[in-house]
Each structure stands twice: as structure tokens, then as C-alpha cells.
Length: 320
Ligand SMILES: [Zn+2]
Picture 1 (cartoon, protein in one colour):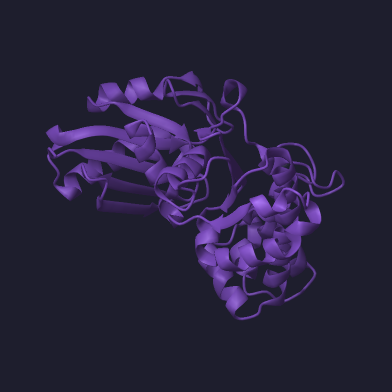
Picture 2 (picture 1 turned 180 degrees about the vertical axis):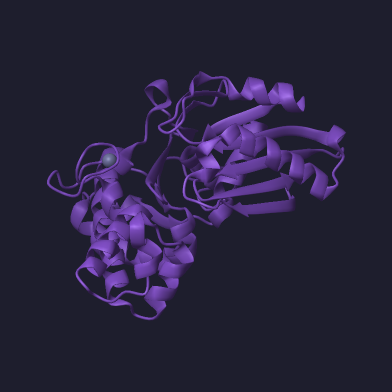
């Protein structure tokens, strides 16, 4: 096989990950950068992509002429067939041809997809979801992402807007969500939702190890939550129990809707405490799904951890 490289990026709200894959799909170089503040990574996705790609080429010492393609996730609604960002919630992009702009800049094909869709695709082609055909993915992060594989293909729906079941309403009288509705899955089971709960309890003068992490609207880091659980922090445990309770209800609803052969849970929080989450969700899920469908479903934590999206990028480049 001739020497060639693909650069894959995961541009998130709090961090940027990059990997260079060789022609054997092996990662030969990695880059990880933490954004200084929440949302900084996505504030100017294009600038971040350009600077990170340049840095990776220089630091890794790969031959620029052997670069085959670049792929990245971006936030929002993305036409991944054309590489066009249709809409992003926090950026002025409408129908922006990012693939065209980046191709001009780097002289190689550029691919872009929605972050959670790529995470699920990565797990489907290279990780824990290999061999399954109908897959429901829950990716709790700052928000709650969803990704669907139906009949062996990524399902993106009309105008690439499908799989927003992070905004499935589980309690219309529940807390307000960023989407404008109340009681969405996201307000209970995402890191932001869990942080909000912890902050409310701290305001009631209850002790919690994560009090400083969540003050002033802050969101805890997954590793910190893991530590708090290990020390039996009561408030942190309540936040996790509440998150898993609503995630079990949402899982039951999705099982009844799709009849999947796999439900997969991914993202940073799953990498940190996926075993705890999975156990708690499984303890409850039978109460919320059709007993006739339940035996057909497997449940797994994503195998690629933080790398799910990077492998999804690679699948996109390779047309898998
Ligand atoms: Zn919502």
C-alpha cells in the first residue's frame, strides 16, 4: 500500500481532538487541545480547523504531498453528502460550503458531518456497533446527542435534521431546556442537566465535591464526576441516578419506536463512568419498553471512547 494519510478532527465545545491515520487506518499521531472556556472550540470552527491541521502536519513530520483527505465534525445541521453546513445554533453560518473552502485551502478533499452522527458511524464501522443493523445511539455530553443507523445506514431524515431525541420531552412540567421546551431528556441526562441539578442542591447548602466545578453555570468534567462517585458523594450520586432514570425512559421509548438490535451509549461521560450508567439504565429499562421487543436488543457502551468521532471522520472519508 502506498504511503498516504488522512487527518481527522473532533471539534467540540470544550476540546479539540485530532488524529492522523496512515494507509492501514492506524493512528500515527494525536493532538489534544483543551479550549479555555466552554464553547470556544466551536466559536470559530473554521479557524480552529485550519490552525490544528497546520500544527498536526508540522508536528508529525508527515509528507504534505501524501495527505489524502481531511474530515471534521461541526456543530449543527450538516449536509454531509455535500459538505455544507446548513445551520448552526451559535454561528452565523447558513448554507455554508465549508468543504469547498477547506478544499481550496488545503488542496485535498474535505469532509464534514454532525458530531454525534459521526460518533455513531465510527462505532458502527470500527467499534462496538460493528455487525449490527439498526442502532440507537445516545451520546450524553454537554448536551444530549442522538444518532441512528437504520437498515445499515446512517439515518439523517429530512434536511439532515433527524435524531434530535435528546429533546424528547419526558416531563412537560420539568426544567426549561436550551431548545425552548421543558423537561427534555437533555435537561436530566446531559452534563449540563446534571450540573444544574448539583448547583441547585449546593444552593440549598448541601455539600458536594463538585460545588466549585458547577458554580456560575459551570459544567463538571467527566473525570471529576467519576472521582465524586468513587468517594460516595451523595449529591453527585443523586445527579447520576436522576440522569440514568430519565435515560432509561428515553431508551424504552426509542426501543418501542425503532426495534433496534443495539442501543449504544457514547461520549466522554460514558468513557469515564459508562459501566455505572449502563448498569443503572439496564436496571430500569424493562419497565419502559415492550417486553416483546426487549429480548432482541443488546446494550453497549461505545468502545472507541473519545475517538468515536475521529473514526466516524475516517468512515466518511472512505465512503464506508
Ligand atoms: Zn430540549
